[in-house]
Length: 179
Image (cartoon, helix red, strand yellow):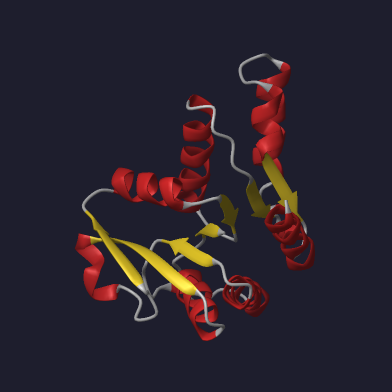
């Protein structure tokens, strides 16, 4: 299974956030999956990629040319891109499902792009969000409100699954892998 992971590139995040990224990467690698991600040795991206590689997994980095000097050494595949649009497109095309860890507006942009692409092309793929301390609860509520107002189909809101902790997220990934 190819798992796209969206997450923060920032440093100095709380230890529990870093530990979750490490746990996810190790799970991806130890279960023979491939990580598809932004390709950089920065923030949580660095932690997830290192965890995946150390557990024997393959790592596909989709690396912006403007940041090629920051590409992660653990990448077994590097795909160079010139725009963020191209980066998101390649990640979406190469993923079987999506996971978002803690992140800012870039992470949110990637999640919404994946959701819009899947909706437009009627090619649903699961999107799992680690909802630490309710980070993504407002997003889920907004999508529900859009569905209630008939601005989006109810299936769109259901595509995004929230998980309060890493244990429930990994359980959902195991279920997706078995199905």
